[in-house]
Image (cartoon, helix red, strand yellow):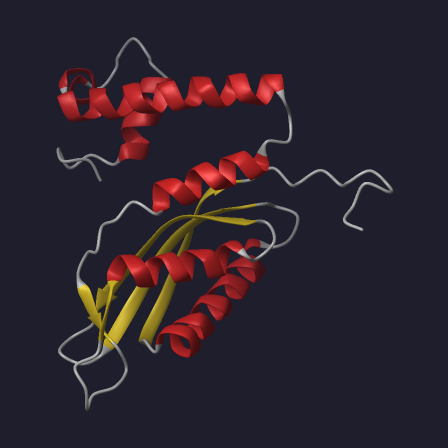
Length: 184
């Protein structure tokens, strides 16, 4: 969400698909303009890298890990221990849950938010992701939900009340490795 209240994805789509009847807000808003300019630069660099050396998935993963590692504590969430005042930062918990979901083949997490529920220790997980279509999306979402729930409870000690998953983009499946080029 940009400071002007517009979704970053909407501003990018409108700028990318620039039509003669462009949205006046997107055209005049400094927040949308700055975001679109930054995304256009990243998009151009990504295209150039893809053209130069296909298979830079590992580089993209490293870049995304650095971006995600930016320190923003966020709110403190209660752990599932009502007798103690134990807390974990939202950013630390979200990082663990994103990494857990990213281990599911054919999934790349876009966002992960954790929202405290009521006055107790319950936490609601809201995750958006991209997924391949090499299997049914409901099955893939179920795998992610189960994995995230397990990690939240076992690794972090969170009392998760719900895990909402929204697929916001489609990934291209990874090409199969040529025979004999796999890990040895």
